[in-house]
Image 1 (cartoon, helix red, strand yellow):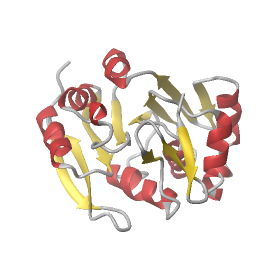
Image 2 (cartoon, one colour):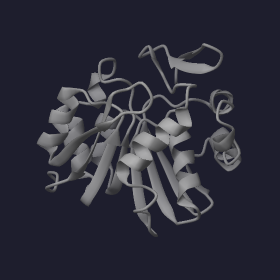
Image 3 (cartoon, helix red, strand yellow):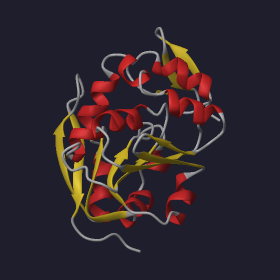
Length: 220
């Protein structure tokens, strides 16, 4: 399970990685800027569109997608090694009333120990375990990726060449990714995996983020 402490009036911080789950300064808007607009969403959404994510955390990205999807039937798969418990997520989401307002079905399922559940027209699966093992074994392919693990400097295992190759191998032709990081080694790993990578303006005080499309199929 997640090992965390609460700082600065309600920010959950992973003590394992010494990294916050989000910023109270516009965390939901940051999600929309980086992961939704970075992947061209919601404009690309259609029935059966599949979003996958590295790093489930509080579920904030999932809830932002739920709000943006406006009833379009989509699938959401997230990979999480150290899941937060329901009480921790309730406390974290209190910072985001718009997300909190649609979170009740998710929180009920999570509190019951379910990692597969429906949120309206969205079908959700959270795959718990080390993504270095669970992602290569996954049978799905995503149309868009939210790469939202802890900082590459503090959690390098989730951002190396093997992981980015696994992301590409589980991306549909023409699929996309977006991430808050613009670290050079991450961009190079994504390029090596077959993505055309673009550096874009980051959110708030962060200068840059990265996004891109699969330019060639990932290795099977």
